[in-house]
Length: 81
Image 1 (cartoon, rainbow, N blue to C red):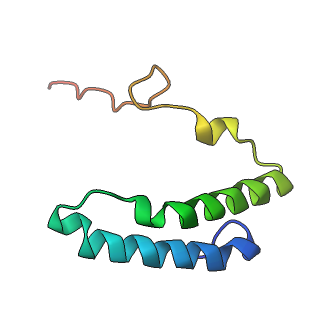
Image 2: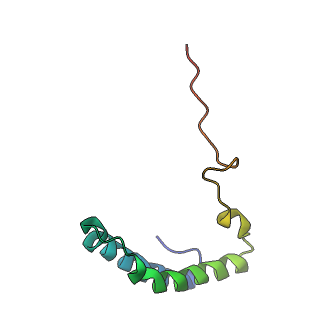
């Protein structure tokens, strides 16, 4: 899948490759230190933010915490018959 910005797609691919390699070769074997891909992620993240800004997409919606808050959309309980 391509990234939001065309110029970010190559960065996304590099990060995805790093993450998948870390996940399969380290995480699944118990090594949870994910710092190996952090530099790639930061560069990719900044590229995505710049692309969002260029496309006038608001950051506040994606940076807000929803899980565990009143904003979280929860499945209504099933009604008993």
